[in-house]
Length: 256
Ligand SMILES: NC(=O)c1ccc[n+]([C@@H]2O[C@H](COP(=O)([O-])OP(=O)(O)OC[C@H]3O[C@@H](n4cnc5c(N)ncnc54)[C@H](OP(=O)(O)O)[C@@H]3O)[C@@H](O)[C@H]2O)c1
View (tube, rainbow, N blue to C red):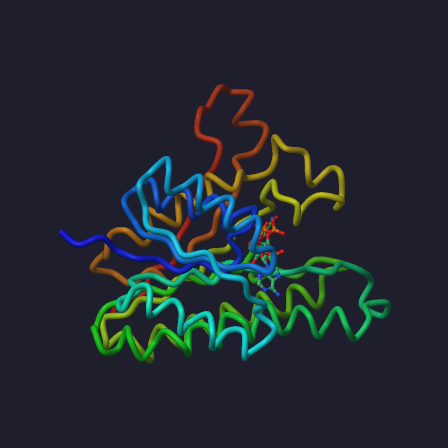
């Protein structure tokens, strides 16, 4: 059976890095990018040695459409068929609504909304041609609920939920699935520096847990269409009673 290829945005660290390791360990070839090319190259060199995966490391900025065009040209030279796209890269600025500068709004709109939209637009013609493909958009619990000092970030993460649900309906006839994944707080650089109570490691998901669920979601094509996967750490109470699973999840299923 031929190897499958996955393209992940924002693989230099955090959830993206864990996703690259998870899929490579299961036999996938990996294409990934971020602005920090040295971090991406170091990760991919390690992955190639450990798992024998073919990897393509690219430097790119999601907020720059020209950079994205070049990334997808190189990606399709490397692998004419890309089976899965994971729109993972994201940024967040957190402050009172009235204090959040225009530049922070612009950056979140560019990276969290336009970035995934443009990447999906680049890859869809090929997926439609092969009548096969999966797009996974990493939203957040902030794409489901509002939180104080989180208005702009929540707005962008709600937007990606709407984009995913609409697109899923539009491209289902081409055998392409679109999933949204909404994790609670995850123990990465992104979460560090935020409310100390919220970022107690025992109460956070790990990047590996998120990667594991995303792998389970996208490695098998269920007969039902899963719209979104919500990931939450189990509460401390459950830990006290000796439950071993650290995370729980729920899904919304849409019949098509
Ligand atoms: N951590 C959480 O609590 C949490 C919870 C729910 C959802 N999420 C979402 O999960 C995703 C990953 O977050 P994370 O926690 O792994 O964050 P992270 O550790 O800060 O990593 C973010 C990744 O995005 C890349 N990135 C940022 N801006 C970029 C740009 N302009 N162009 C290309 N790549 C860019 C970064 O790479 P470079 O710096 O090399 O560009 C990095 O690889 C995000 O969409 C985030 O919103 C996070």
